[in-house]
Image (cartoon, rainbow, N blue to C red; front, side, top):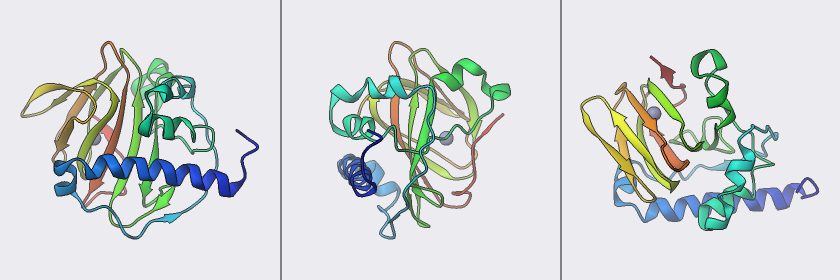
Length: 196
Ligand code: ZN
């Protein structure tokens, strides 16, 4: 893995981007939510590991975007927005995301932002909000999506959930982990989410 050349690593990230785009294009709700950006520029990430990498790698046999993600786990700059004081150590050991594209993404874009996030089995992602409008697309596993003013719904692969600006939302993973593509658009796109 570590012996891969920069060009090989870029190819792996472009495969992941392509796999995510295929799933986006298969979802009319996501296509209505935001156009796929046309200003993407690859910026080689500085690898930054998180404890959950073995769990994310374990989803690779499911193929598709999960295999494409597993191929880049050692090369990606994984992000954890929250501190242990906010969410606890256990949460941080079973969670993390990459910014696939966006203002500070692996592919930069000023048009919209996309994350691929992982939450481990049994994890409770507490209520949080942000100004940017958000669309989740479940890539693998499943989770219970809760939001103010909306009935909770359990979503598996292909499931879409949209959150309005500052609409408080939470997720509960029960008998499976959750891997999701998360798109942000509009004002506040470069901000972070806040636990309330
Ligand atoms: Zn959100």
